[in-house]
Image (cartoon, rainbow, N blue to C red; front, top):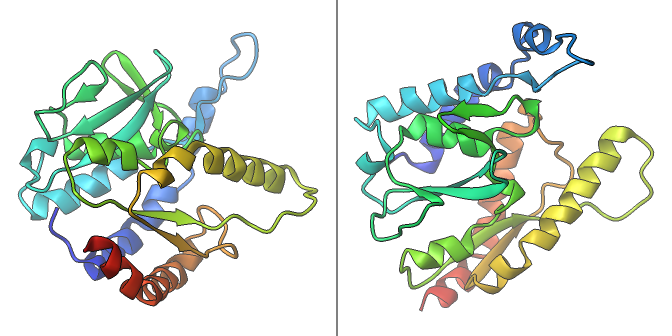
Length: 230
């Protein structure tokens, strides 16, 4: 949308508490006695949409088509069990591509992490996190006609025996994601591997640390990145 990295960090930091806020309303609405408890998530992803809408409004952007730079945003539709791609590139067509949607809704659909957020109901779709199918969309980026693709991935935690439900789930998710992105890594001209193994998912207190570490580790790779772009 035209924001610098520093500006994006400030925006995310400003909205982080509202985006991560647990909603008692969503919990109680999900606890309906229909042959058991129905709980879509511990909160709604609506605040993600609102945050993106507010940031986009300052740049006079509403629809994904208003963004000048080519963009792809992957998401997952639970109704069809298929990946759906939001993009402003009209030359990429197909039933899995959507070219006309508000940017806030597109980001919300792609960021609706299962369990944390209830699925995002949009028309005939029921969207959850795009990372289920495509956590590193290098292949889709190639379809835009770009010459070079630089990807970012995170280092896996050191393998060890896990004892808690949370750690078992997170390590299993990391391994699943690592397996899914193998082909995408092959399609990348360069991969920046960021080491944030000490940061837990959804840890708001580690936002500044994560931003600084990402910046420093990217600088460490800058010479190799420039060579890959030649």
